[in-house]
Image (cartoon, rainbow, N blue to C red):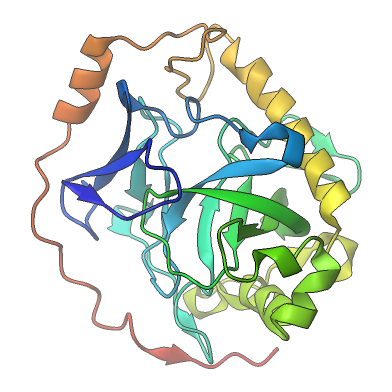
Length: 292
């Protein structure tokens, strides 16, 4: 079964297991079959114009915390878990779930052994995160073509966790948005709300407020593109490791661990057939009021 919709017809999202359960997976199918969205989808949709591919993990307004499974073959999207329980973000008044389409850029990696000079904290061991602020709700597993406008530097439990701000190039407002300074003009209040969201979203779970580098100020497009370039180089190095801590099986020619048809079959068949969604937690729609 396919799900979601994206700008790129070359990719199809294939659901397995039951949504909102720990066996749920979304594999990505390209023209030649199942691919790793992290490794096999190119970073650039148009390098000359600095247009990137974005993998959508979490559609706007939803609460299920999804992410590419970086330790599993072909990095399917799965629901994050803690202590064996599926994770959902709380609704922080006045927000409902995630307030943008949330995902990551392929072929990037925030190296946990690298201390980012400007933040003083190591990378978070994941592909670089993206929030897409356009007008449409994207499907889980969609591949969007986006231009990056800037970045926020979240410090999450002592790690640098970049949050790129991007706009779908096919959005009705894309032509008006070319740098982070344009966002307030087109979407007044969104950048402030974004900082508040990232600062507060873990508080209902009993954790302290998150912190930011640069006093929570955004860096511009040029800075963000530089960060993307650095994380792409870290990813290239990861793909050449003989014994990486994360799963690097892919069709990338330079990769040490090459994908095979047998590996694809094994990865997909290790998950159950797509079935009915599991029940949502009873408190998923509850408002949480946080004093900033």
